[in-house]
Image (tube, rainbow, N blue to C red; front, top):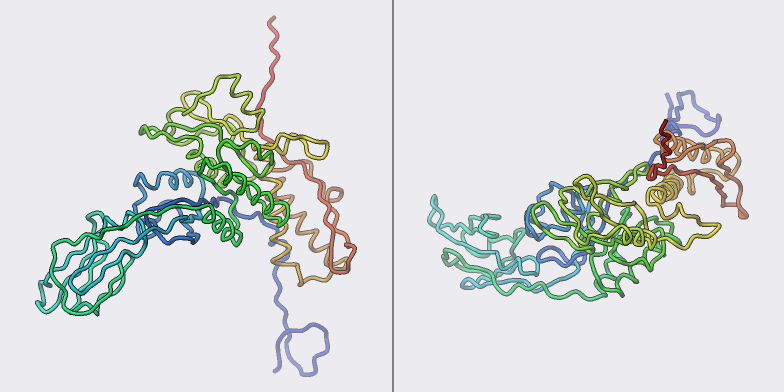
Length: 438
């Protein structure tokens, strides 16, 4: 018996012809948040490449230190609230190296961490014709190989071997000469170019360089306005950006162990917290985890002035370090762009709508659905499903599926126009009470 699928009822042979299709209302879902990206000078790791890292992973092979090391402070701060860190190593450095007889041992990556590598060799206890070759990092064994001669040695996650012949015995041969090198502004440019293939919610710039701030801000504005990639930049003391896509951190914090973070270092936490915040969540009065005090306390008048200028400020409340107000640098209000664009919760809602509807259209509709009433109606139904989900979770309100969204034919045969009216929900931040005393 014949079988298969069908488009029209024109089959010749007897048989069963079946089409399997998916339920259409499963496409309009919220995109996942929680990805922050940061470029840093490091002492170990593959340079000029974005690496995806998560809290709790074993980072030693990737960045040369375990999760608790002070060298990873900013990464830990970023991942206190974010789910994923896209990390980029800006510098390349010089690789540490050593020579053992005819064997050259070279660190896999450049950087001073390579100077903490040590190689030991010893006769194998079970077979005297074999040699145990052990690689240690800061005293911890990271690789052991049992070989007959040098040509059998394989590169591991930390060192690369070259040479042949008998392996000399050594109780400890340290690698030397590793340096971190320097970072040039073109390294940041290369990072921003590499980042264009990814979709983080936030980008953190840990720098006081005014020229870099300008470059990063311009790049993010272009991504948002010309390419439709709704990402926010977080940096320190740069309200000159005057844009909803740029967050300026005013001051820092003191952690419970006494570690002092200035504003540019606190950028890591703000970027992670912003990336990890849901579209229906505000960071206003959210506590900075493990912070004991504010570094750079401001008076009441200074706090008010900083907020007016568009700064993201830390203050203390009830023994906690909190975000005074979850705002960005946008201050130039106009009839077409009102005050609410300065609120990051509202920006998250609007960015989510832009990113998610773009994603849904690209994945399921572009080039696949006819541009007729049925095709446009199908896309509209997906938009309605998505916006109703936002309304159900309290991200938008007063959405009317009949009046607030229209999908119509564009000026060209292959284009459509989507008109959407939404009212994002803000968080309660001010309470004005009137108390009558009888």
